[in-house]
Image 1: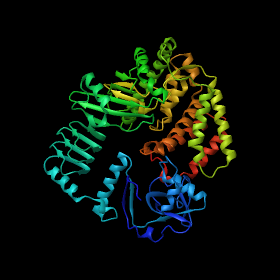
Image 2 (image 1 turned 180 degrees about the horizontal axis):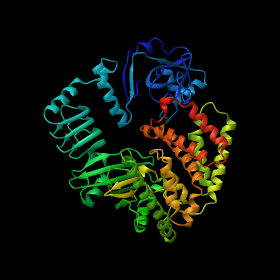
Image 3 (image 1 turned 45 degrees about the horizontal axis):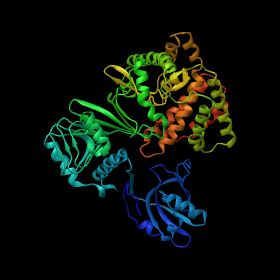
Image 4 (image 1 turned 135 degrees about the vertical axis):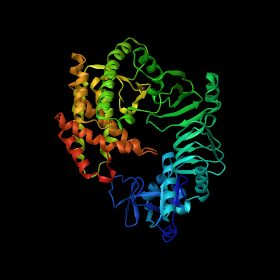
Length: 546
């Protein structure tokens, strides 16, 4: 049995040499270098499927290829979606699951668009080098790409184009897979994208590009047609996940675009987004305009504020430009806190419950369950003491004056559109310490702000009035609290398909928390010790190069 969402090129003889007989229920293909490496082997048999911190040399990745005895059927519970559940149940009853590392093999997980595209690039390069994986290369697609170049299509990186697709001269393709029957217009710029079957793509974009009729269900499509034909002849660009149980689709047609947001109403804050946008707009905060909110079917159509976040601007900004942008943001944050608070206190619109002891306790538990629990080689006592340190931080913040805060005010949630700063992802706003928002902004794992600029921005906020100055006295405590929540989120989301971006943010978040504890001399010796252990043991290859 093989998983459908992997690319594989190997000689399976290594598996066949270890057939599942006797107590051995199955033999699994293991990869020692790639993937999440959550499986530990002992003398050729699986010791654990969830040993995430087993360390290099021992932890391996299960590749999704198994040689299985039919006896596995008795261990598969009704309704299960994971074969691992069956293996673990069988191991508890004394069965063994063998694991074999296959040398000279190629394996890639292609379960997300990003992984699917990366595998195409790897297979192309392996074909060029004559290495394992070359078997998967489609030479006809390569010939098609060369023909398109001669016809005036600009190709950088790779372009795996089905011969039945139509690419107009002038189109630009950069690491793109184009499926059967797709049509790409002459002005389209497609980058790191999968263009869907029979899709008509006049504008280009990233990730997944299809016709709107392929991205929307019939009820959504009819509603959008009534709003002005956003479904008919529109291109849909399915954007990446943002960690909030929402799906984002950019709908584009000549001269106009909008963002369609499909959300899960079980997460209460998602249904509040449109109302929050109205409140903030009245408070003078630039947010996306809401065109329509269908509460019954849980979707929103809103203004497209472009593709450029503050995070993107910082990658090329000079020191002066970076300082100017962040100073403008700090002024906006103060205005958000002052005017947003005034409006929210008079409004009957619901918002999320305020920061209180229960919410701080939840954030600590989130940090512990998803980050601390995954650190190997530290005692239970140190874990408990670090959590008590964080509890002291929470108690100090619990005495702070409350204002309306964004709660997730990082660079990826601040867009630059028409020369203005536009706030997004404010569905979780609530009353809490002003310093929490400032810590989210300044101790942002996605953008490293130099120490001198951090101090300048804190001082700028404090200079607005006496209350703001008092709020910033808690900045260090807020930084540690905010980063604890962020580390819990990054650790959880990083383990999900497509979560590589969140995984990369863990290392800078750890560094930022460590720096905050030391810089502000916070009473957190055990937390500092725990962070020191993590930093010392983290393999250099896993650290964020920034």
